[in-house]
Length: 85
Image (cartoon, rainbow, N blue to C red; front, side, top):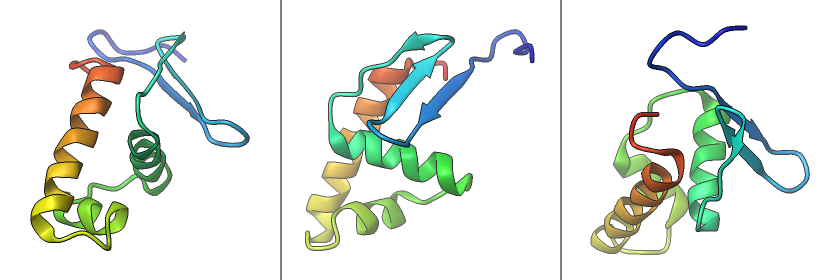
């Protein structure tokens, strides 16, 4: 299957140790939460609000802290996957 110009192929393997590739190149994500978020988004195939992601990943933190953590995880995903994913 070919990839349209300007788009990228993302491969996420979740059985065993998580393995992520972008355009055939292994991607290293720096945090377990960023891997967890990518897995959640890949499995659900839905758009999720930052609010719902924060509540899912940090249910025991207050709103301000969970939102700050969510920003860091999203930054880690953007850094690991590249900005134009």
